Length: 86
Length: 115
Image 1: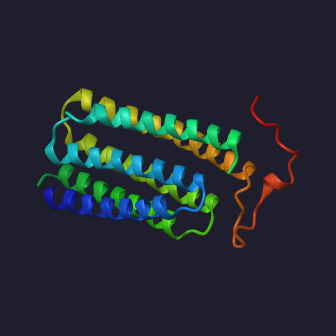
Image 2 (image 1 turned 90 degrees about the horizontal axis):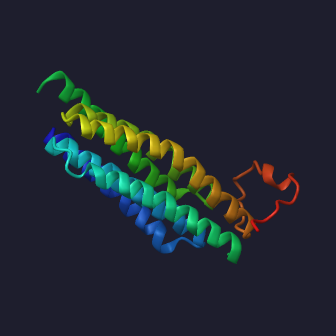
């Protein structure tokens, strides 16, 4: 289980690194919003992997909160883009 | 290692590989709409796989309940959020790439903006 979660953390870190590159260089604001949303999803997956590694459910409520914050932030910025343009 | 641990390990590695696939897609694809496609679907499936793997490992019932709640939340919110971002990006003038061939929104009536 330690080996599998280590491998999972490595894969998630590589994905987050690529997402971070898109977040920095993304030409439009919508690119950055999508990249931020994906980054939060990867964070939720990382918390799930951590709880599977330790076998304790201590951090699981953080998962729910991060998932909800990701959705609310995405929809707020989407409305902002639609009103402001670009 | 017991059987459930092996199953959980396989599910976790597969889900994290799908997360990496989402990152790869968002980095490589040419326009916003393709990136959104890559950033929404594979990580959702990956999150489901990782959460099932974590359910097999966390033995408290409350933990399993929270993981099921996260799965439901992701299934409800990921399409809605992607739809809102796609619509606002389209209307604010993000251009489609040459390789993106299907553009059904261009044949629709001009959309009405939010009040």
